[in-house]
Each structure stands twice: as C-alpha cells, then as structure tokens.
Image (cartoon, rainbow, N blue to C red; front, top):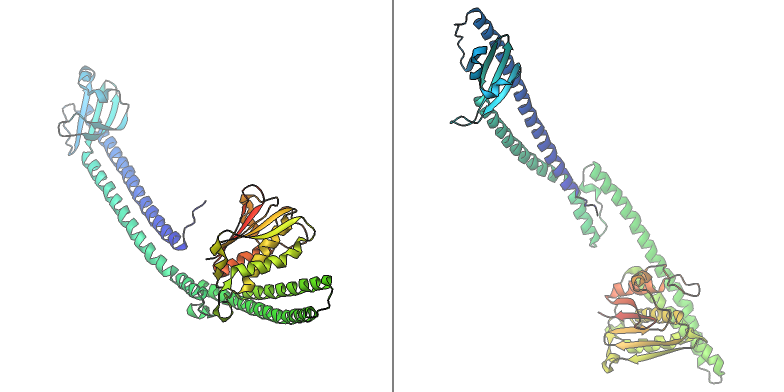
Length: 430
C-alpha cells in the first residue's frame, strides 16, 4: 500500500530536497569548473614553456632557463637510458602523473612531452600543492552543502508551519464541530484565500447537511406520531373484541395475532425513531428490562411466522441464573433486535428445530437451516444484503437494523456457522 505523507511533510521534504540538490549542484559545478580551468591553464602554460625551452636549447645547448616550479629535461639518443620509466612511452602532449615512490609522500605533477628528431624534451610542473588545495576546496564545499541543507531544513520547517497553520486551525475547528460543539461558521476565522474558500464551502455544506438532518428528524417524528395513532386504534379495537366471551376460538386466535402484530409495529416504530435521532433511551421509570420476559414475548409473536413448516421453536435455559438477566434499554428495542434474529432463523429453516438459548449476558438463536459461510457472516449485517436462499421479498434490512441498535446501546451481535449445520446468531449485552 502506497505511503501517503501529510501535506506538511511534503512541504518540508520539498524545501529540503530543493535546497540540498541546488547546493550540491553548485558545489559539483564549482569543483568541475575549477579542475577544468586549472588543467587548461597549466597545460597551456607548460606547452608554451616547453616550446620556449626546446627552442632555447636548439639555439644554445648550454642555456639554462630559470623556472620557479617547473623543471626542464632533455635527453639525446645517447642518454635515453636516463629517462624515467613512466616517461619513456608517453606521447607528445601534457600528462598528469602521480609518483608514490617519494619518501615525503605521493607527488603529483604535470608533464609536458615533446619528442622531435633525436632529442626528447620534458617539462615537469609540480601540482601537489594544487591537489591539496583542491581537496580542501572539495571538503569545504561538502561542509557548505551540509550547512545549506540544514538551513533549507530549518526554512522548510518554518515555512511549512506558516503555510500549514490555517489548515491546522481549520482541522481543529472541524474537530470541535464534530464533537458536538454546535453549528458555527468557519469562514470568518480565515482570510479570503484558498483555506478561506474551503472553509466557506464547508460552511455551505454543513448548512445543507444540518437542514437535511433537521428535516429528516422532523419527518421521522411526524411519521412515528401519525403511525402510532392507527396502531393504537387497531390495538384498542382488538382488545375490545377480545373482551367478548362468546367469540369463536378461530376468531379469538386471529384477533390475538392482530394484537401481537400491532404491538410489534409499535415497538418497531419506537426503535426506528431512536435510530433516526441516534438517541439512547433508557427504560420507563428507570427500570431495567427483563431479557427472559422479552424473549418469551417475542417467541410467542414469531410462532405465527412458522406457518405450516415442520419447525419447532423453543426457549432453552443454559443456566438457572440466565433468566435473571436484565438490560438498561426499552423493551421495544430488545424486542425488535430479537424479532429480527428469530424471524431470520425461521425464514432460513425449512424444517427442524430453532433454539433460543438464554446464557448469562447473551442470547443465542440456533437454527438448523442451510448455514452460512464464516467469511460472509459480517457482510450479512450490511444494509441491502441478503443471504443465499432467502425467500420472500425482503429488502435485507433486518440484520442491519439489529447492528445499528447494538451500536447505539453498546451491545454486540454476530453470526457464525453452527457446529454441525445451520447458523448461530449471538446477541451479547455489555
């Protein structure tokens, strides 16, 4: 995965690299230019001196020209044996030679060579001093590069801090806004530059989002209020009819189903309203909700979903103390979460047994359906995703609602393959 640096780091690195490369290029250019000019100057001077030395010796063999740092040599055919070994095979021109056999250390010199007729002429110029100066210059330039690189880094840090200060201030204000600090305009805190334009754009976007959220909350509140009224009428009519003693048994059962469906609709409305407001509501009168009681109520409600399928739905107490478990949440929220998990098990179980296991601080729904793949378990909690083999016209919202309710109340929900077959849905509290 490609590493992405922060903008501040990019600015610092850019300044540092620019300063370092510019200084290094200047230093290398200075060294190369000095060496080139030095070689050209010394070579031309040696060639000129060699011409004069050879001409003088041709006119007067006994002439002794005076050189300060230049030594001249001439060898006739009779004296070729006296020519140093390094000089014998050199062609005409100027050559750079290093002699490591000197007792005082290595000596470097320029040697001009001219071989004409029966005489060889040599002119030697000691450049050891120039080489030492060149080394000193090289090291001095290295120091300069390091110093300028350090200055570039300091300037980069300072410049980056100045450049990034408005961006950092904008990020800090956004962080305070994200913590619920209220809707406050960002643009007045910044100049009319790029950051100010970004702040103004964010203000406009935040205003639209706030308006959208407010409108959504008002719509959910209105819908919930309007739906509660007909649901209450349905429940009231069902209870009134159930109070009659001369009802046929089939009619009574149908009225009970209507009453349970109306109660379930009311619970779902309340849970969805809490989700829309992202509001964590406690039980009425600050009393905890008994998990076992809600489980029994939900199981009885969900039995009607089995229909004619050969499926047995039962409650299992894993431990005696399991029935005493309670949660700090409205019974409607717990009922919606359990209804979706149990209803999901009924939908995917064509035959067999579904066990709702109360085990300490968790409730497990174990079915004998086709099961699930472990790698797809988490994906099934995504909105709009349905498992393989799902029947009906569901929208894949049930598990997503359970997931959101668990996040709101700090619970944990998971799906896993059963030990032998089917699937296990676990709702853990706390």
